[in-house]
Image (tube, rainbow, N blue to C red; front, top):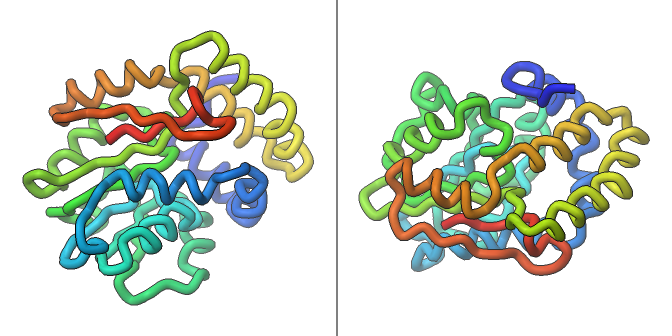
Length: 231
């Protein structure tokens, strides 16, 4: 079965939005890992006077991580899925947080304009048809010296990393997806990670897109070798 892309993937996220938060809550450290990636942006003064874009914000888990780590920053969350955004908007947020419904490829058309001092993109790039084009958009949105953190399932490249991911998917993710009626979405999750760049390959992709001082930082726990922050 081919990977879900574009409208098909957006529709799958729309259908699964109501159950998404409950399922990710079963992932040990899910929210703590997002806060770790937000801290890796290293914005000073709690983000005072800074604009931050949460690209692919989903139901707002990554937005909440940014709001906790950067209590003084203006945060704009963007997602292509209306269902996921509805869940995000239903939560309580300070006035400095706003949301926009738009695909990552069409930010300008939706009124999302720079400059931003930082961008966080969590679990986004492996789902894009054209990741290089979106990286160019992100680079153009950033202020001079701006910072990007990509929090992503990107296997480290060792055989053991792939074995861990396959075991987690077969033992946990696919059964949960089947139980909730979202099997197609969670099968996509499994296969999209296997088909995506390894961590070194995605770092090279960032450099080709014009980003400088690229670092690949591991995340602790069972996700070591499976999930990374690219800064």
